[in-house]
Image (cartoon, rainbow, N blue to C red):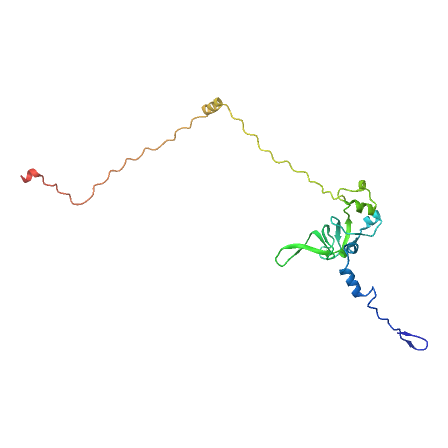
Length: 212
């Protein structure tokens, strides 16, 4: 309502038509019925300031192998590589960004593209380089998708075997060694004779001559 000279003026609000393209119903339908090309265009991610100055663009469709920075959520500030892009769910999976499930297992955490910022592009595809007008000689190994190989450590070498000494040298060493002196042993005590058993003496048996 607005106050006029002659009184209050009522402004009638025209209801939104159901056939209007701006209706929420049509917007949701367009999101769910979008084609693969339309979903790719919807999953664009803004570039960082350095990339904007270099490529003269504000946003680029996300691709596997790009490096992004998380701008919202519990992983805010982390820069990870894109592992998988799901255009069906409009979500992205990053390396080392996981969620613990009810079974105490780690599974990848899907993130929306509006929570990301592009930090480094994967320019291994020739078509993408032509779109951004970048020459191949201007690329770094990381932008080409090449992984830097770590130098392999040399395996530890075994110690050389000991040289066998000649047979005569062993005899000389044994001859040079002094013989150990015999230890003095105490004389063994004489064994005690068994003592006779105490008791009644047994009588001799009578012989056959006595009986005769």
